[in-house]
Structures are given as C-alpha cells and as structure tokens.
Image 1 (cartoon, one colour):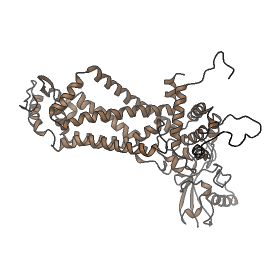
Image 2 (cartoon, helix red, strand yellow; image 1 turned 90 degrees about the vertical axis):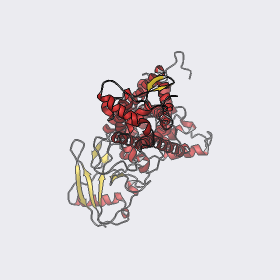
Image 3 (cartoon, rainbow over the protein chains, first blue to last red; image 1 turned 60 degrees about the vertical axis):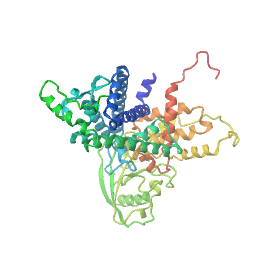
Image 4 (cartoon, rainbow over the protein chains, first blue to last red; image 1 turned 45 degrees about the vertical axis):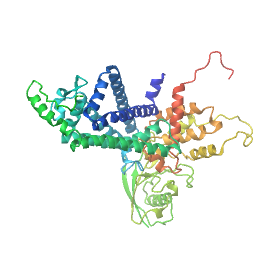
Length: 263
Length: 258
C-alpha cells in the first residue's frame, strides 16, 4: 500500500488533506488580498501589478493550476468525509444533538459549498470577464496605456464591476461566509495536522481569529469603498459611458481620461 | 416528584422502534437517574409489561457501562458526570424527559436503550496494550517518568470508554476515545515500543468499525464524563501522521536477531 493510498483510505489522512489544502488556500487569500488592496492606490499601481502577473504566464498558470488542485482536493475530501460521517449515524436523534458544538462547525460543508459557488462566479466575473454575469458590459474592452503599452484596465474593471449593487452584495455575502468558514477551519487545521496542545491552543485560536477578521475587513472594504463611490468613481465615470456605447456598437471606442493613467 | 418519560422502546435490532411515554410513580428527589428507571421498571413488571432495558453496572461513575442520551445530551444535563451520578433533583416536578439510546452505526442497538459497544473493545485489541515481561512485579520507579508526563497520561487514562463522545458527535466519531487510549500509553516510556504501530492499528480499526471523522466541533469534550481534552486528538493525529509516513515495517531478510 503506497502512501497516497494510505492517506486517502484513512479518515485522518483525509483530514490532513483538508488541513493542508486549507492552509495553502489561506496563504493564497492573504496574497490575493495584498494584491487587491492596491486598488486604493493610483490606477497604475494595480494595473502594473496585473500586467506583471500576466507577463509571467508560467508562474501565473502554475499558481492557478496549483490553487485549482487545492480547491479540488479540499472539496473532494470534504464530500467523501461528509458521506462517511452521515453513514456513521444512520438513525438521527429526535432531540437536538451535537451538544456544545459551535454553529460554524456544524455548517462547514454548506458554507463551503456556497463559497465554492462564489469562486466560480468570481472567476467568471473578473478572470474570464464574461459580460453576461457582470451587469455592466464587456470588461475585455477596457484598456489603458502603461509605459507606452496597451494593457487591460484592471482598475476600471474592479471599480465598474463592484459598483453594481447586486454584484457588491454577492461579494459581501461571500466574505461573511468565508469569515465564518475560516473562523472554524483556520484553528481546526492545526488540530487536524496535530499542532495543538494546552499551551499552543489559545495562541492558535487567537491567530485564527485575528487572521479571519483581518481577511474579512480587508476583502469587504474593497467592494464597500467602491460601492460608496469612494474609490475610482471619477476615473471610471467616462469609461462607463464608453463601455455602454461599446457594447451597442461592435467597434470599441474607449475614451481615455487624459493625464490620469499615462505617465 | 413525578416526571413523564419519553423513552425509545425497541424489541430488538430487526424490529422497528418508537418512543413510548411512561409516567413515573412518586419519586424521591435524591434518587439517581438509574434508580428512577428501576422504580419505573418495577411498576412496569408489576403490571406485566416489558421493563425498559438499560445498561448499568458500578453506579459510581467509574465503569463506563451506563449510557443514555437524556434530553439530547449523553449522560444528562451535568458536565463531567455519568448518567448514574445524575440525580432526580436536577429535574423539576412534571418535566418531560426524552431518553434515547446512543446512536451510531458502530454501536448497533440490542434492545430499548442498550447498544453494543464491542467496537471499542476491538479498537483496544488493535493496539491498546504495552509489552511487559511477565513474572514478579517490576521494582517501583525503576523507569523514571516526569511528573508532568505522568499527569498527562493520567488525564488520558481517565477515559472509561463509555462512548458518550461517539453519541454526542454529529459525525458519530470515536476520535476522543481512541485518542485517549493512544495517548495514555503513548505518553509513558513503557508505551514507546509500540507507539506508532499502536496509533496506526487503533485508528485503522476505528475506521473499519464505521465511526465518522472529526470536524473539531468539541461536542465530545463537552459531554465527556471524564472531561478528556481535544488536545489528545491532536496528539493522535501527530502520531498517526508519523505512522503513515513510516509505513508498515518490513522484515529484514537477514534479520531475526532483534
């Protein structure tokens, strides 16, 4: 029996997979947040960052496939564990069971399922930029000039995309669920991987709380600031009309705001 | 005082069960929960009805035989106490008390409130032992054990194997029981030779018995009559992880001396 088989066939082995893939995804969430918070800077900052990522296709696709594998493993392990768990109690109690269990710990799978659906939406919304799901128009037509080159205008895409009320709401609901999912998952991954004793448990709990709150605040402040027109409203005002015009006519006719994006 | 009992009655595994309501006669408030059931059973027997089957033995809270899920919590409303140490003064006159058996696939029902917990014995057989020489008792303190280690091992060894952890867990997981048994031996110097084989053997047997996995809800710790800590589950996860990486020991071709 090889090690992959041993891990996959054991309940604890699957918990290790849940913990390890969860840890990798949290590390990604922190990095992704750091990238996204650049939206509070000038448009060139995040556009330059996006251009930098796009200019390293090997790195970008390596990271994307790695993340996809982590998400996939996390989901498949969760589903197989849930099947094992529900099979372990064929007859339910008539009274409320799970005494002493926190709310988040009881609903990890439903919360995770909604977060997975959000990931699909988020990828369709900004990564694949499908016009059908954003309620604005064709994001791929948004371009700007950076260091003399024409690059995708990620700044305008984020601002225009998150100014839509229902889109903003989807993002905020997803962040709330992610916060609850991490509130339980982040400390539990240490438990599953065996990094816990009576000395370290309070510290792990504190770390988990601080990290999940920081991620909630960081990720929520972006859609809120954009929706309240605090960020980038002047910048996208003209692009918005251009985008509407562009979606009607086949020829793209973007109006670039002079002096704002080019240096 | 008098209470109304809503009890799970089931003749045997192949007959479907249902809740049945029993009115108790006048009770002494200082009766234990099991003594209350004795009184109810006496009344049922006198009427020619089938008494309620339930598990009990020492009635001192140390043997792990009594079970029962009382109003949704294994071993009743108190913390760190078994059913036999729960007294009727905990309840109010006229209360309706719902009594269910421990529910888990690995604990098949035998009758009424009695379930078969032999799965725990089989897990113990898979590694819950140490190797010692036979003969006269070894000299006391011949193996030095730090006080803190002895205390931790004792915390784990408090487990009476009642199965409340399984009954409370939303996944019917036996992790707390298995972790306590692996830890109380694995912490001591005498338990080192089989440490990783023990973790592997007992966890694999636990999986085979059909218990669920751990979601770290903390229900087991909350209902454990001996208040065994979740820390031991982390310790088991550690030991099992090492055992998985090591794999099964292979015999050396020219070996045999060891």
